[in-house]
Image 1 (cartoon, rainbow, N blue to C red):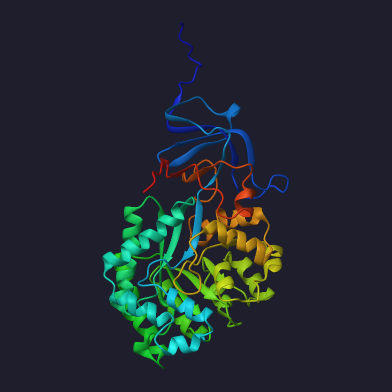
Image 2: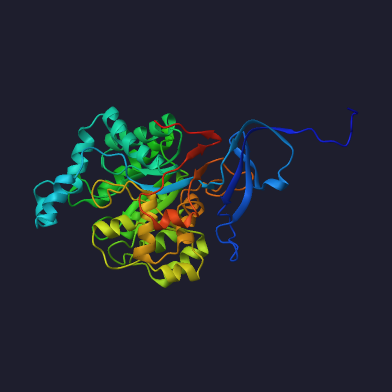
Length: 418
C-alpha cells in the first residue's frame, strides 16, 4: 500500500452507536420536522460529549473504542426532571387514605399531618436515612431514562435540617450517574417554630442559611413559595435580593393557588423558571418571554389536588415561552415517580402536543435548571442519551408504563442497572 498524504487518519473517539433513528429535539424547531428526526443515523461521542450526530452516510472517519448496533431503535436526549422534592422523611400515605375516607385536610393538619408531618419526620431522620430513601426515588426516575434532575430542600425549615437535606442532595449527585442541580427552598412554608412571624423566618434564612449554603456550594438556585399561604412578594423579594448578591440563580413556586404576583417578581429577577403558573395571566407571560424565564408545568400536583384552573398554555405558546414539564415528586401533593407519566398528564390535562411534551422533558427542562448543554442531541452537548425500542417517540407520551429504555448513557458511559 502506498502512502496517500491527502488521506485523513480516523479520529479516535470513545464510542459509536450506529443503525439508529434519532429524535434530536434541537432548537430552533423545524416545523416540517419538529422532533428533529434523522433516519439511518449514527451518534459519536468522546470525553463525555457528543462529537457527531446525523446520517451514517455523513459520519467522519473515526476509530471508536466501542461500536454498538442500535438495531433501528430510537435515540432521544436523556430526560430531565427539572422540579422535584425527593429528599424527605416518612411518607403521607396514611393521610391519603384518610382524605379518601372523607376526613378534611384541615382536620388532618390540625392533628399534626400535612407538611408539618413531613418536617418533623425529616428533622428526625439521619442523613443516611434521608439518603437511602431518596436514592430509591431517584433510581425510579433514572430507570425511566432521566439523566438530569433538580432536587429542592424545603422540608427542614430550620438551619440544621435544611443543610442536612442539601448535603444529602449533593451526596446523591456524587454517588449516582446523574446530573443533580440543587435548589435551596427553605422558604417553602412557615415552620411551626416561627408561627405568626414570617419576616423573622425570612431574615434567618437570609442571614444564617444562605451564606452557609454558598460557602459549602450546596446549591446553585434559591426558590420560594410565593402565595398567600406561603410568603408575600415583599418577603420573596428580600430573599431574591440576598440570593442574587450571593450569586444564586432564582426560581419560584408562583401563581399555583391564587394570583399573587410572584411571576412578575421572578421575571424581574430574570429567574431560571416560574413553576406551577395555574393563575398566571397574559401580561405575566409576556414578562417571562422578555426575560427568558422558562415555565415549569406540574401536572402531578394539578391531579392530586383536583385543581381545575389550568396554566395559560396558549399564551405561553404565543409568546414562545419554553414550557418544561416535571414530576414535582413530593410526599404530599405530587408523589409521582414517572416523568413520562407527567408528560402524558400534560398532554391530557393541559392540551400539550406530544412533541411539546418531549421538548418539555428535554431541552426546555434543561433551560429551567440552567443546563444549556443538555437536553438535545447535537455536537458539543453532553453525551446523555437514551435508546428506545418503539415505533416513534410519540408512543412514549401516549402509552403509560409500557416502554422502558433499552439503554441509557450518561456523559458517554452506559449506565448499568443498580
